[in-house]
Amino acid sequence: MNWQAISFDWNQVRAFLATAEEGSLSAAGRALGLTQPTLGRQVAALEADLGVTLFERVGRSLSLTQSGLELLDHVRAMGEAANRISLVASGQSQTIEGQVRITASDIFSAHLLPPVLERLRAAAPLLSIDIVAANDIRDLLRREADIAIRHVRPTQPELIARLVQEAAAHFYASRRYLETHGTPRSYADLTDHDFIGYGDPDRMIAFLEERGIALTRANFRLGSQSGVVAWEMARSGLGISVMSDQVAAACPEMQRLFPEAEPIVFPVWLATHRELHTSRRIRLVFDLLADYLTDNGATKPAPQS
Image (cartoon, rainbow, N blue to C red; front, side, top):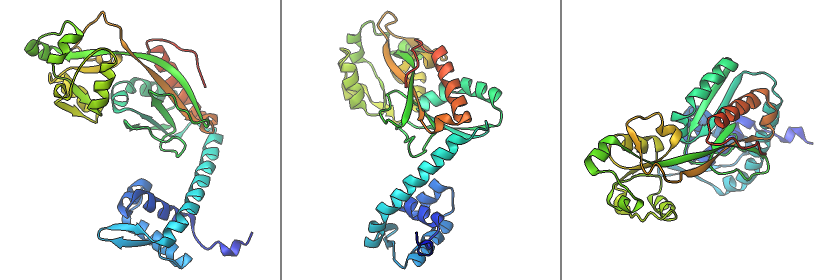
């Protein structure tokens, strides 16, 4: 290998890749934890070292030049290689300290994770736990998190997945709402009630229609992309919500509707990268989460991978 031909710094390459993927220096700076001027200097230094212009400014945004576009695929391959190196190195770590990032929905993060975090602090006080509360699916392969709690089974072969719960949910409304609007006695009665939408209302309408409940957008006048916000709306008496029984159990002002009805059952999967699972700190957190969620779930399924 001609080592003299490699004339650039990886930090500069990383700055270019982050800027290209995030769309701006400010967004890339936030992603990398660097200031915008620092990122700008790194990108400019890479352009100087390579003798090419990688970005051109269009109004207030940046656009890749043809040279930048041609370089981007190669740089992405370098980024994936660097990520694999980081995964292997993290997986070999045998110390129970450092940071572990756990991603889960905002409802799960806010209402169900705090008790297990207390156990984690007692078991490994040197660990630093970062909760990524996100309702989209974060990419474990790109280290957006170390461990994920999901309601769909991961399909990537590089991931280890364990089914830890078959959780139950029901319809809930606050006593304040029911005093004002009356208590529905059947699913047919729900057409006359207000619902709190969470995410895409059309998906919720289709989901309920499969269960014989005919609602329209007129039933979903209020909603939020945030599950925490939507649940607080329901607790404030603004409408009916579908919620996990575990979450609702901690809210005495909420009343379960149709208590004799079959619950809405949804899976809870725990996932991590195979390389990270060899790390003692990742394995400790993964196993503690699995034990806690299994013990506190509606069922206790056998481990799967």
